[in-house]
Length: 84
Image (cartoon, rainbow, N blue to C red; front, side, top):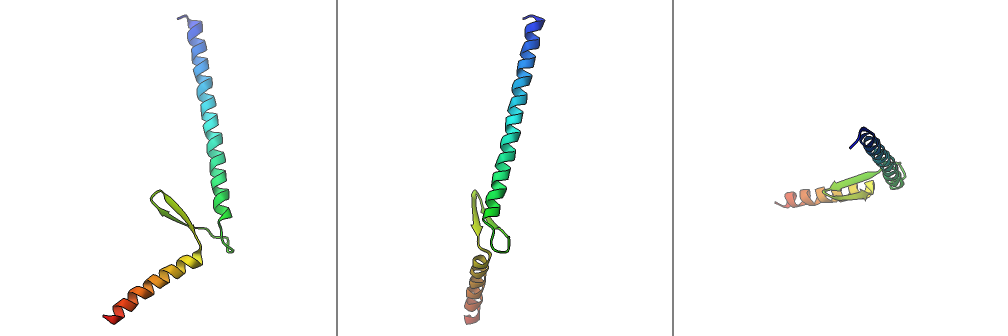
């Protein structure tokens, strides 16, 4: 291969790498923006979003409903302890 072919091959590979990186950055930015907008759409009347991560499963919970479940579970445990 001549020097000219090597130069063009290098320029071609550099352009491909630049295009790939630019596409990656644009996709990452757009994906991040969409995820933030999605989480903001799930907020409650106080502007808060409660997310529960369980492995690969992500749940959006209502704060009041979650607090009620926790308090009911605590009441059930203390009720069982009082009987003993």
